[in-house]
Length: 222
Image 1 (cartoon, helix red, strand yellow):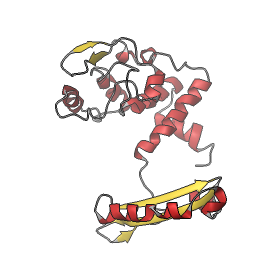
Image 2 (cartoon, helix red, strand yellow):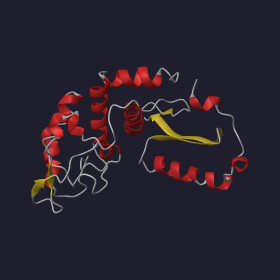
Image 3 (cartoon, helix red, strand yellow):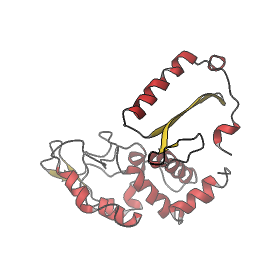
Image 4 (cartoon, one colour):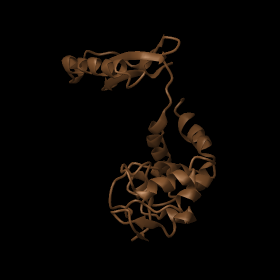
């Protein structure tokens, strides 16, 4: 059964929301589809366990002119990040580590990290180690992109072919690339959660997918 099928519907005003304001989303989302920015979208809002908004836009298969449906399956992509963080916090609650524990305790490749200076022209030693809290808060200095035109770190990430092997191989390569900023000094969306996934494997002794299935999804009936 789809998630929304188990939710009772409610008039938005009955749960402290505005019908008029919710309706503002419709032309915005349809505009994204009409402008070719996205092929399709679903929007759903629930409050106090009650469904107040649910709409669909666009095509799940443009070539076949197949509209998106309310039960169309989407890839999770970065929505796996909060699930990974849940897994990490489960292990934290079980006493396997503290949030201030250096990641190098489990991943030796992160023991003596190097860091780019702010201008990207020089590389210095990390002032302190990357911790599990840094991973959870995206303050490690790992990136997906520097968001600049000429920072040397982007080429290093590309040359490392980080996604060319298994998770352990990726983490080893990542440990050889300097951080873009000192750990804990700034927020930068990046590969921190990938490292957390590897941490889950190391600490639990299970493959990442197995931990998800046996410790989270199956107990929840998912």
